[in-house]
Length: 187
Image (cartoon, rainbow, N blue to C red; front, side, top):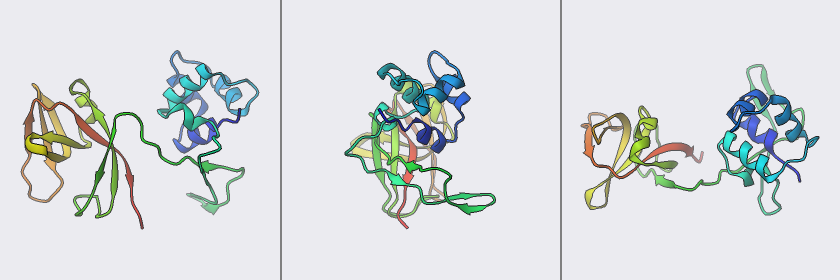
């Protein structure tokens, strides 16, 4: 089986040791290296452990015939632009379970009209993970609040809208929020 563990790891800017330490239970950098290069067979168990450590789906770590990956033509680095030393590919984004999409129709804050945002839904006990991040929160009557989550306390969330001069929203008993994880922007 051909794996894309190295491509995904490099795309996330992680070292072999980073991935090894993120595995549950932790393993060694050498083991991850052997699994990447194929000197050790990758079982489904290992594939799932590494996928969880990389925060991707296991399917993102294997070459699938029906998925078109984007070949890397050049790498922009501090010392200039150069061709990759070996063949690399960019894994196309795929929504994880529990993700929602947000379309930007009018520019707000750092977002431009036409942007597409991918957001991960969080349950109330996980709201603290999104402090100082851009979030979407449901309000009554099919409306939403969108902006920077500035605080969570006593069953309330405080969201600062991205529009200049807008007043902060304080919402109680919010069933979920969605924290922005990815921006897709056409040029």
